[in-house]
Image (cartoon, rainbow over all chains, first blue to last red; front, top):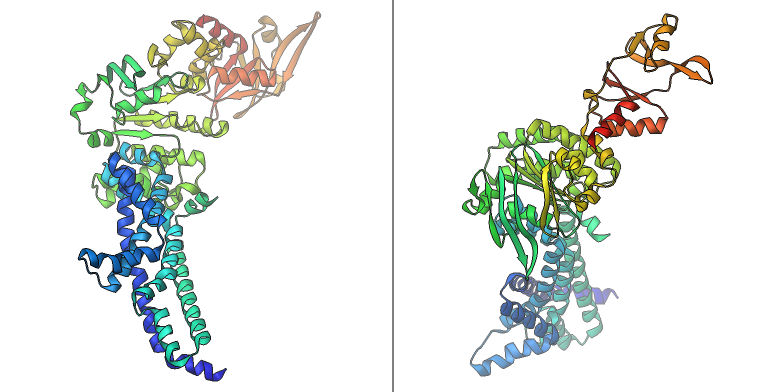
Length: 225
Length: 358
């Protein structure tokens, strides 16, 4: 038992290095997904008719494909078209774009649930459309989308080991490397599981705290009920 | 003055509003009333260009509203809607100061204005830090009114602002609203479907039906001369009774046929016998304790003392007083303004007033 603990500690630097890569992958993918997702959400709500349709198809297709297939197309498929993308960037693109489809839905739902009355209230007191979006709709939409966003973040975190398939040295891959030389799969995989869980736990509570800090007294509660 | 000239609004070949022509005078409350779907909200929204008319022109102070920049136009027109209009993520102070901030007022000026407005709508300064979801319906409406008045616009548009509020609080809000209007004297266009509200608050009525103007004019004129059966039925069979709302007690309280005494021993029976209308009032310093009245039942003469009296304020209307009299089974009401006794109003006076409406 003690021996196992010492063994884990010995290999901890490598595992933590892998964990850091996993976090980098997750954060970058989520950021990409956020930028693209917001754009898709806004275009789907306010864009011209054909753009709306196009965005709907974008969401629909990305939600309908297995993530591993998306990653393989980007990393292994694109080079035959003459587009070579490094493994890490391919992983961020794959995870990020897939996430953008889900995040677009989260933001669109949040904006829609605010309702036209708020837009009208903004316009009626003499804000232009841009200011109404910026001061009235967006601040409320961010608050409303936080629970969904938190969930999406943890999903991307837990999908990050798929980057293993592209040969990226994230946590699972590092674990696998250790197992190859030590033949102790149970100990190492269990340790990986614990690290993933702790990361999940950390981010989940981080976002919950943020939600609490920015909670409007009485507002989110009444939306929940 | 706001002038609507041949205003029409078409949605997919059906007219929401058709060929409206009427004027809205400065400094008065104009009530737009009619059944649902009559185009009253559409009409209101065309004034601040939330809806653009398909035909016709609207003038504010003789200038076509199309010649104003819509954003600038709306900053000079306050708009109050049914509760949903407040921004839930802003506290009361932030909600009220949105417009002054857009207009880039100085901090001190904004702060002063918030205090003035909260005082005007009778909200305690503690409310500044509260959020809309922590307020009652009536409080939200007061904040909504304060926000609409923030930059001191000339015109105020109100779309059923008290519609979602319970009757008790609605009455309170009506009273504060009338007091506020006495101070600010804005040009108010008020949409309602409640005829009682329209009669209570309005100076002028604009009656719409299926997007068309049926009748407009001073409230009293419309009440006394309903143009057709539609207006008659809208006003109700009890329109004479409703007309009493316009009559304030201070115009009718009188001290004819009265004697005031301080002590029961001072009672003058011959004064009561002389005229059936005569009353002797027992008044102890400031408070009216009761009154004496001559009664002749089955040839049995009696001076009866009543201590269960109906009291009403200076600004009560005759309809309220009538309903109080009915409630207490009395035929005389005592009108006091704080501690000053202004006189009495008798059931007979009220009935006479109703008759004069006919």
